[in-house]
Image (cartoon, rainbow, N blue to C red; front, side):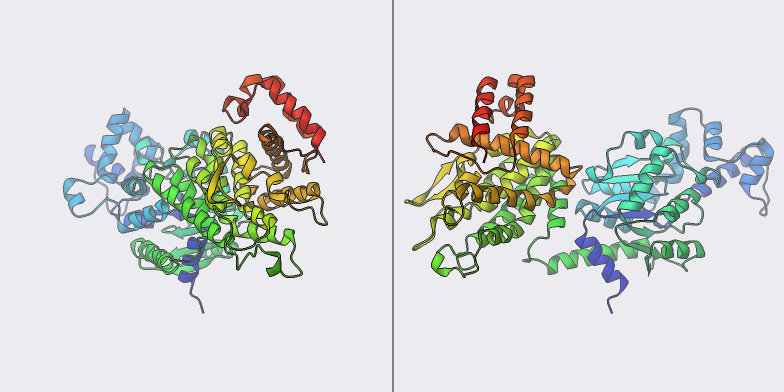
Length: 579
């Protein structure tokens, strides 16, 4: 029977970015970091010593402080009383959380192998969100040493301005505060509530992510425990790891989440083992096709970091190469009617091509939607992929020209996918690159490929011109466009808030692509277009142009080299061609 550790390994590997860590003091104590309660107790002891008072072994220093000063021994009360400025407070606390030279030499109060393994999981895209009750900064330090600059949420202010979790690369949520900000929660009363912005983020994590719990008993953090209990739905599994016996509170929470338990020898042992297991699984998969979820998370990771520019280009190029080689395999996809089964249908080939392109479509959409404000954009790589996916030479021997043209359908899918996501993400720079860079395609009367603009190489009219047998060209074109729309709907769910929004953007892109085709037609006497949109879409685009004039994005970015008046004239002509 598969053990729980192996199940966890596969879950993390095959669902990158979908699991969050929930870390407690057990992860930091291995590094010699005291708990918040230990800090408070120690400070109270120091106050007594400074006052010349002695505290017997049976008296809790915090009780002594409260009785003596008639106020609770909270982190805030002690820190504000003992150090009046931020600089003084930081100096007071550094001894608890920052290592001396001797401690650093002994490896104390520095990131352990557990923190380093966590940083590896984050850097490689497996973990995006870390929720912790700890006050120290060892996780942040380990991530930065790995080259990852995390977003840290440690209170109401940082939570209010935070972007949605799924839009961020690496997020640390310090639910009980950060020692450098002296906003740490210690007392039971302090742990009974969080600010609304922090609570909202906690609820999102518990609902939308799987959980890997380590070093947290669930016993003392009252509101955090209640948040888990109140979460009735969650998309992924919970793995609760424990060093000693699993307590009653933890057992109840595991049962509520239908979770799994893993006993370990400490955080260092657990996370090092998880890292090694995931790496071993990756090594074992070398040569196998890249899964779509992993490709998506890698693209997100590569977009945001300059040192991954080549990695992003290689990822897109390798995926496109694999798809292109398969599509151009004439044994798998015959292009001569003599080799086709009697049951052959164009729609079936659409489906098969669409299945092959799911990963490259996801990569293109992710780049297009998120790439406008990142250090890497993926523009040229996606544009190059269109040529890679378009056969650069015709098949040997006799072939059917319509089937040969249809081999460019995967490139059309990628163009549409990036165009839709780019428009949805206001990434007009990428849309412009894709629609204005030539595509290399085969030329039936030459052994050399031709460089052709996308509107002439990949437009639905170009892929359906020969399908007149039993099916009108207009009907064939409508069928192809509908197939594109249906194929891209599922991978597009991440980028469109609703089905209505998807349909609206799809229509807008189709109208723009038709405008480009029409302006490049040059004597192609097509008297009608088989489209998925109607007059309402054209009128909507016309209103945008009338309002924005030369600032309409396709004109402003050079996609359409026309004036606003000319663009409106093209729309009027298209309106007459709609089938």
